[in-house]
Length: 236
View 1: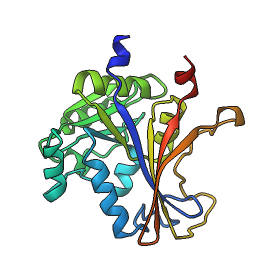
View 2: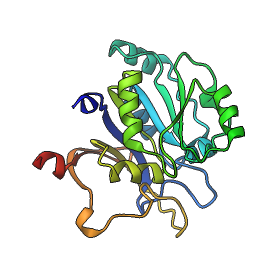
View 3: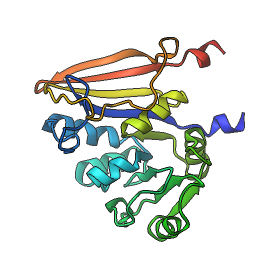
């Protein structure tokens, strides 16, 4: 019962092309989206106590997660800290210690990894991050991550920004409560180009069900907002 009280509200934000891709063949990341989606992303971030991504997102996009201007002001007005806690997940500790998320901005930078992390990588990340947490042996335990963020860092609203492996793991553990999706009028193609949810995939009986809460079209982009239907929880 005590662990349940620490569980943050978890929401996922992602943008994809009309054919379900989140990057391009040459690895440019989500830069195929328009300015309206960038504004939406910044607005969604103003509700988050912490932002979680996988190592691949850090390596490819190198975000800072630093808010400024009206978005920083909105956070403060909501009673949040000026900057969100920065969280990266990597089972092998492959996060570069030079990543911009480790640059000081007043918010902690946290790494979640496993016992598979080499000792030299652990030492370098210990120096770069505010904390390195071991949460599993072979695989990262995402339930433990979410509960630890709630318990030890007072995270009440946790934003997930991918990539596909992280998104799949979070869905598999039934940790995601809401999904914000931007559908962009672009076709990318490519059998090996990343998609929003990857991993091993789900069998038919285990498919994730969503309920549409809101739908808007802005500058040709479809902004969709869903609630995740957690059948096991609701029938318990």
